[in-house]
Structures are given as structure tokens and as C-alpha cells.
Image (cartoon, rainbow, N blue to C red):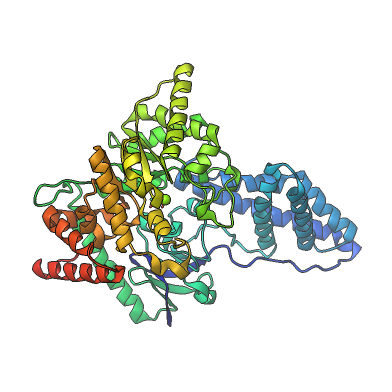
Length: 583
Ligand code: PEP
Ligand code: MG
């Protein structure tokens, strides 16, 4: 048994077998075969392709069951490649003419096709190269009779182990059989961390090379509260983890009784607690935990589940289903926020040298006017099904806000001229997540209906720390004086202009920060369903006056460390007063 420390990215305890994703790139050995063996090699190729196809079909079926029809498109595209004549002809030609073994012939054929695609002018061909390589690895594994593929869902409840997962990987992975996550890379606001919190499983990220010792099926344990992972845990450790899980369950059941109570302080101050949602499958859970609506719908995840840009009609139907499930509770649609670590080949947002300072968020949408307009049209059409607001990501100044609003007006005009049924007077708000937006918050507040502070990016940009880089994750400091001042400035600017202001970054899911956010004057917190009952509990325990006094004290701290210590002491004193009741 050995234990290793990483970044605690999502709380909870799990133990079970590891399930490795994206490991072992197979490079087949090349050997010359006798003329007489050629038919046998061709048969081997056919069988491997058949096996790979069966595996993909099985996965598509499971994904459809779990996430609904249409969500398995990424994998369906791979089926088409396996039926492509070009792949077949090229492989058979190499086997016959060069007389080499089937796997080497197949890899050579795919390599040649990929090289030709990469040289082409046409973007679509270049984008197919990733799919080709994915399929190549899948077939090469099938040659070895292996079931394991890079996006294979775990067949039994497992802890997912990988270098890192892209948002499209996590969208495909879903939640079935996922007990937790261990990642070599990433910080606590990277997207795997966010997904783990939203489905309520533990995650430890930033484990660097420690994960090299873990293979699929190895027994491991994850403590997401302290950021520890244990390889080959002994019986005593497993028993301890069982006990910790049981305790957490009891606490969770106790908190369930809060579901229908208001998030209101003892001195009568009410704030709204909303849910952050990536995928529609998370909505039921959020409602069950008492969410008053969706404060952040990360719409890009709906795009990542498709391998083509969803049409206006398709989006309208997905959005309206979601709004109907909310049964009258409001939904804030954040428009497409790709770029940064959320790249998607088919959308054309690519990896960049400096991705978080690159072509992301509203910059991407403003450059892709018709794609943006279509999304806005779909949201307006879906809005006839229930209360909806629109929120623009990564706004840095008034010019971008005005341009986004102009495209919104174009969308409205188009819908009008098409005679479609839609809602045309939606509230338009912005994410305040760049330091620039904070500094011009007064100007922005005069031209929009609400603010929601994206603390993940706000911390990243203010403290100049890449949110996905484990080496600088120690700089994720929500209580840094610059962050507290940035939030305060934003709240004051919003209130002076008479608009409401929420916060939808990961800070909102940290129970220890609930009183701080209350005292800073936020009107709404949007957070993960799993964290909602605890945060509500804290709000119901704390008067606004106490929270404001706490913030006043924290605002005097010169460093984040000082503020953290003061907060920890304050929480301890409160616990003592409440006879040690848990936070
Ligand atoms: C944020 O930046 O705080 C936020 C909520 O947006 P995302 O995490 O999707 O960038
Ligand atoms: Mg953001």
C-alpha cells in the first residue's frame, strides 16, 4: 500500500478498481509473411475490424441508453471510417503487395491516409485525422483481442484514471460506473474537477507521474477531501473508507430535509441558490437537492456531445426539453464558451499556444456570427417553454457586450421575419470573469440586466495562474485580497446600477466560503447540486450582519494565508458555539 498527494478537486471517498483511459499507444510490429499467408492476414484484418465495430456498436447502445438518442455521434463517426472503402482498399493493397502482417499493413494505410488529409486545404479532411487515429488504435487493440479502448466506458464501478480528459471525453464518459477520478494533470477548476463535483464523486488531480504505477483493474482508493490517492489499499484502509462513506451518506440524508426550505438567513435576508449544469442528465439531481433554477447552463457541453454543429431546430428542441423539466424554474443559458481548455475540432476552436488568452468565449462567438445567431434564435424559441435568461461569457468591455446584443437583435429580427413562435424580451446578462470586466463593471452594469461572477476564470486571470496547470494550482486563492476586492467592486457596481449579481464559479460550491459570499452581498449563488444543501444550511445559520462583519475582517487581511486562517478560526468558533455541528 502506498499513498500519494495531489490536488483535492472534488470531495468524497471512493475505492474500487482503476479504469485507465487513453493509455498505451499501440505501434504494431512489422513482419513479412509468406505469399501463402496473405489470405489469412486478410481474414485477420476483417475479424479485427468486425470486433472493433461490435465494440463501438455496444458503446453507442450504452451511451444512447444513458444519455439519450443522438449523444453517441462521436462514436458513430468511427463506424463510418471502418466501413470506408479507402481504408479497406489501402490496407488490402499493402498486405497483398508488400506481404506484411495485417496490423502493420492497416497502421501503414491509416498513416498514409492521415498524411494525405493533413496536406489538404479542406479543413474537414484535416479534422478527420483525430478520428482516424482513434479508430486505428481501436482496431489495433482488437487485433490483440483486447476490449479496452480510449473512450471505453467502465464495465464495472471504477475509478477513472487518465492523464487528463477533455470536456468531450467527459461528455461521452457520462456517469455510469464512475466512482471517482484520478488525473495526472489539472487544477481544481479544470473541467474534470467541475464534472466530478457536479456528479458528486471524488477527484484528485495534478498527480503528475504518480499514476504511472496504476493499471486498469488495480485496486485503489481516493480521498477527494484531502487530495490523497492510495494504491493497493489494505483491508484496514478499505474499512476506514467504508466508514467515511457511510458517515457522508448519513450527513447527506440529514441535509435532504432542507430541500424545500428557503435559503434565508435568521435575520430574514434571502439569496437564491441555483444549479450549475453541464449535461441535461444532471438536472434531476439538482432539483432533488433543492435548486431554485439553473444559474449556469454550460451550453458548450451540448455541442461537445455532437460531432456536427447542432442545427437551430435541434438546439431548440434540446433547450425546450430542459426548460420543461425545470417546470417554471428559471434557466440561465450561457452562450457557447469554447476555446481555452474546451477545444472542439469540428467547431474550429483549436489548441493554441496560449489558449486561455486566445480565441475563447465571446470572442469566438462574435467571430462566428451565424453560429452565434443560431444559438440565440434557438434559446429565444425555447424560451416560450419557461423563464429564460441569456448570459455572455468572457466579456472584457462594453464593446463586446454591445456587439453581442446587436447579434441578439438580429436573431430576434430573423425570427420575426420567419414568423416563428419565440420570446423576444429576454434578460441579457454577462459573466464577470476578466479583471477588465471588474474594472469597468459600472459601465457594463449600465448596459445589461445582470452579472454573474465567474470566479474560476476571474481567479485565473487576476492571479495569472493557469487553472488547468497543477504546478500553479497553489495560486488558486479565492480569499486573496485581489479576489475579495474584485468581487466587492463588482457587487457594488451592480447594485448601484440596480441590477442583481450572482456568482457561478467553483467558489460557490465551497461550504467554507458560503458566509463570505453572503457577506459580500451576492444575490445569487449558482453551484453544484451536490454542494447545495450544505451551503443552504450555512446560510440558514448565519445572519447577514455576522456575514458582513466576517467579510469586513477578511478584507483587512494582507494575504490569502491570513484570510484563510481567520476564516478557519471563525468557522471553528461557530462550530464550538453550535456544539460542534458540522459545516
Ligand atoms: C467561471 O469561469 O467561473 C465559470 C463559471 O465558467 P467556466 O468554468 O465554464 O469557465
Ligand atoms: Mg469561465
